[in-house]
Length: 116
Length: 114
Image (tube, rainbow over all chains, first blue to last red; front, side):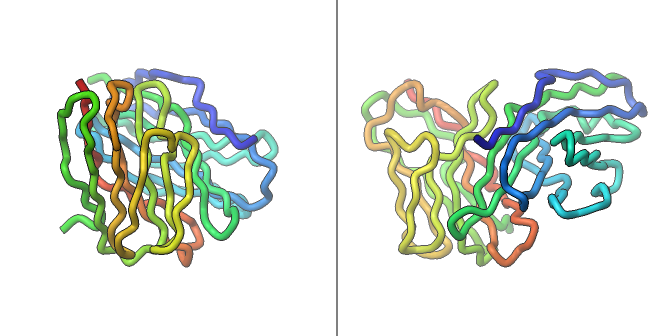
């Protein structure tokens, strides 16, 4: 069965510090994608970063990086130099290609609070 | 203008009422999805559509129906709303030709069923 697990319901980090949000996944597919989305209190879902299963290098997007460890099936999000505006809910997600389309599975989310 | 729009953005209704949530997109994507979000459960897929002639059930389709009126429009209906359908509903789109398979979300519709 395909599954995304986020074991940290809530996290605190001091402003300007780095923080790692954990995500593990389970799939028997060889080709898949891993995503992180941010959901601020306003509710919208904001795409942050993507990692393909065949990508050898970890994805980076500005202050966001994805620590991809394929053998351990983990795809942790690292936010460097945290800002107050980073306080939000963060979702890890996985896409697999099945029967002509992508299917997406989301984790339950981690609520991050950045402290001044 | 937003690429994926949802109407209404907020709705309060009563048990037993029929309600429709609408989604429109200007991205030209062929795949469209409806998700619901509940606290502690993340996002769960209700229905998805490959194209106008294709509709597929997701993991929690009971109590819902959908209509893909055009490539750009995908509506979700609750035939007889019940309180446990109170949730945040997201429409989303994706493009098969996008190798990342990334999903573009609408702004969400907050539905309350009393």
